[in-house]
Amino acid sequence: MLETLAAALSLLAHFDHRLLDIVGLSLRVSLTALAIGAVLGLPLGAWLAVARFPGRGAIIVALNALMGLPSVVVGVLVYLALSRSGPFGSLGLLFSPGAMIVAQTVLVVPLIAAVCRQIVEDAWKEYAPEFSVIGIGRRQAVALLLADCRFSLIVATLAGLGRAMSEVGAVMIVGGNIDGYTRVMTTAIALETSKGDLALSVALGIVLMGIILGLNVVAHFLRCWAARRYG
Amino acid sequence: MFPLRVSGLRFAPDGRAILDGLDLEVSGEGISVILGPNGAGKTVLLRLLAGLLPPDGGRLDWGGAAQAGGRLAMVFQQPMMLRLSVFTNVEFALRPQMPSAADRRQRTAEVLARVGLAHREKDCARLLSGGERQRLALARAWAMRPRLLLLDEPTAALDPSATEAVERIIREIRTEGAKVLMTTHNLGQATRLADDIVFLTDGRVQEHAPAQRFFAHPQSPAAKAFLQGELPWRIAFER
Image (tube, rainbow over all chains, first blue to last red):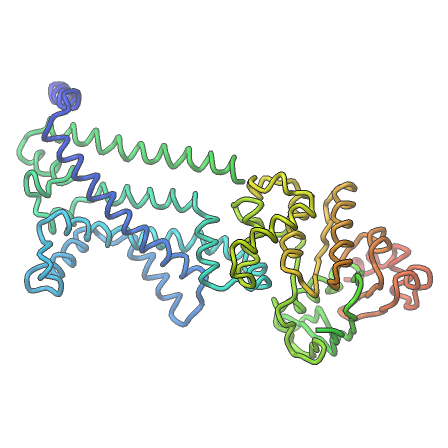
């Protein structure tokens, strides 16, 4: 075990080319999925917070349930959509980083939207009377509330990044885990462990855990700083 | 918009009447102060006038119109402050009525200077003191050039110097032509600011009189007792 750990640390210390490629692709895929997820999920969540219409409650329940959507299910659904006979088969995305971005976006949008909805709705309850007297419309209210809650929303978005980076099932199914093309940290860990190349698995695990831990540290300090700076 | 005539106004959530057939006529000038013990319905009356609550009965007549017509602003007892700059906390309120960003910036800078907050325009509004927050809320309302300004306990929990600053701003807003309708528990403040007093108990107007006459010669037994400091205790025990 110590030998494996030493080998893993050696890979990290020598900036192993294969390891860096995998980490780079993971970050590229997950950060892109997160950016798209935030662009879609934040306005959706904020709109759900301020809008009142029949069926809103059902949508919120569905959104909350989708937060726990198993990634393999997302993988299968995206696979079906992107496969040659599927509705988006003509895009030719299956078994490409693009397909992995789509899958991870599907995973993070409900998470970001649901958390955003809760955060913004709490603020909305506090602000709604004054917005109403001033004559602020729903669209302006959404923009103002997103700006007001920006720090809490950044933390929620970082949670989305954690979800995207740590999932394995969906990217395995739609990406195919092709060496040098669609192999990301989680799929590489799964594969290399089954092959017995534990050094690379452990090295990737250390990087993955470092990123997740780093995100939480950033989220914590951002929240503390924002509380001091903006009340 | 004026005279504002309120007739038979009733608000009774869950069957418990907070306002019970309230009648009132308010002119378009000066400062009217609504006095009354806790639970008399002062805040509810302001919220009904602002359209934040639906009445269960009665009628509001805004100078012949059924609606206030948009030129109404309200400052709440605990005004909301966005986690944005002092400047933006005023500027955003002008967006519905002032499409030009340059006009909004000019008007915002103008009112912030009038309330003595120009030097703090870049600071976060949530970091202001209680008195500064209330001045900012007044600036926000003032910037909208309201015809009617509703103030709900604007100096509750403020120290004397902050209270004095807020009262000075209220007078200036009145001087610029806005009608001010405010609630307060502070009898000293009512004597300093009010042109007329609306005295409310049990969801009805018991007395509506010029301020001087009200304080010198209150007509209703309830107003007399309130001014002698008796009514709040009596009501608290009776309930």
